[in-house]
Length: 328
Image (tube, rainbow, N blue to C red):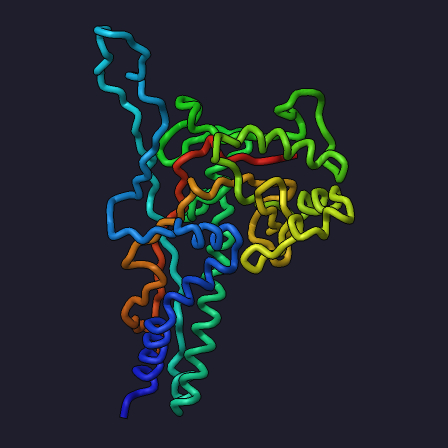
């Protein structure tokens, strides 16, 4: 007869094998940004590499010229492609059970219940922490470089190995209430001034068909924007809608979604909006560490079974100039 340990391990393994895609979807569905990236096909599974390399098309071809007849054409080499390089980041959660728990739940149905409850808890932990990390500044050990790292409050910084102080094409846009990009004095952010900060930043981020498609907002700024709309605007179908299950408003063509708060927030700093063009954001995951089970581990000094589930990846950006933030 199979031991409770082996039965527990097999139930966890089978559950993970059969439901890995839905488990991964549960992680992305917990966060409006991850869900948008996933829906646009911007979740990339990579099979290796020392680091994640993201090609950049950062400059025009310098050989363009207007000519007539037998004019000499410019055939010099024009270096227009570079690449941002992002380090792999790792995360893990462990499904565990003590020998006492396994023996006390030795019946198959009891073990199934125990395994499923531990898996549910493990995946909830995974999705909550990854959802928080996508907003991070990446300063914690082995943490994803999230929006605070990619879209900095002053537009500068080294992202993907490229210093935007040296290469200005790599600086993100910033709208500051203390010094608005449209000029004039400092603005006190409120219901009556919120759109006056949003509009100039929107215009800065539009380039032909490229424009922000998602605005992630802290609760306070979302409330200011919401209250700035007239009652008619607020409840018209083109202003208020559910974006993939997340309640949102509209600003021009972008969905505005709140993800702040202290109790259940996703990690956006207070008094912040991120204007995102998600065509240039990607979440990369290693194919061998995508909510992947590691063979059962047994403690040498504990009566317990431990099953690690591992993840390896990072958030990458291929155009910071088309991303922006509104700050106090």
